[in-house]
Amino acid sequence: MFLHRLVAYPARMANLEFGMIFIQETRHLNRLTSMRILPCLLPSFFFLLLSCQEKESAPQKLESRNPTMPHLPVASGALKIQGEQIHFIELQHSYQGWNVNGGNVKDDLEEVEEEINHAKQNIAAQGYSPLILIEADGDTPFKKIRAIIRASARAGVDQILFAARQHEMHPNSLEHALPLHLHPTLGCRSTPCISPLFIKCARDGNIYINTGPAQELLDTDIQSRSMPILDARMDSYCVVARSAAQQTRIQIWIDGEAPYQRFIDLINMLRNHGIENEQWVDLFGYDSEVTCGGMRGCGRASPIPPRRPRAPSMRNPLLK
Image 1 (tube, rainbow, N blue to C red):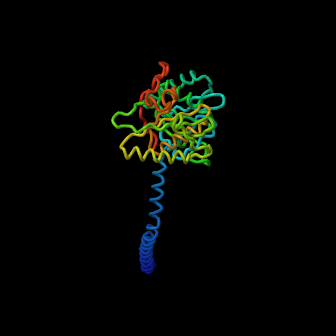
Image 2 (image 1 turned 60 degrees about the vertical axis):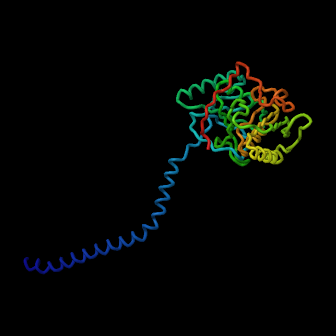
Image 3 (image 1 turned 60 degrees about the horizontal axis):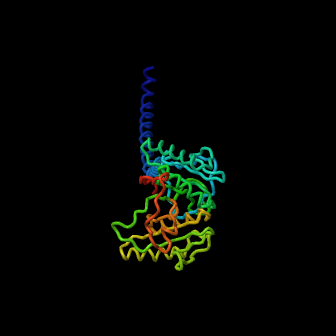
């Protein structure tokens, strides 16, 4: 037995030495392999980490409270909507009337106004400034849009967003909008104003500038979103205003039967020129003949009746 162990001992030692060498070589090979593979894996790892961070930081897409969406108007300059559902009072138009936040459709604007006021109070109670988000078909008569804007102002909300698509093929979803702040007519105070430019949109969608004998027909293609002739005039007007260090004074009147899309076209063009202080004649019951007839008395709008108080100014930068 002793001899058997004595004979087997060298063999066991040889096996043990071979095993140790095998383990060392295996570890060395693993290190070489990892050194070669790791640089290849690092870019993929960091890309995966970055994509995960982007997904976490990306804002959630705003979903409509309504099961369907109207055929939204097109505005190339529409901005990405930022904010959570709680910030918005969603107003959607249909041929039956308006609904507030996906509720029942109502054709009585006073009832709609009450719902807007109630929604505004709920949002304000949570520490937010409410915003109106209007969803309507581009063919809707402007008088319907004008009426809901007036109702929103009476309810005390002066930040309006008009849901729009950036191009014709864009889906009808709440991704982009054009902003409008219902500021009162302040006139020219610290900086002098250039002579006002009066823009008129007729019921057929044709665009005019000036009034009386000086009235001039510009764009007649209602399928054109860019309104190239008016856009060129705006370029010249803005150049003159900047060279004279004066404010622009744009006054716009839209016929109630004109399509809502034309209203969006005009806002889109103004924002593209950096203009945000335009005056919408007749938006709050202004008399276009008294206010801008022959350019007399421009800047002095007729006051809103007592039941139509001006909305307070609450800036809420939720749009990029």
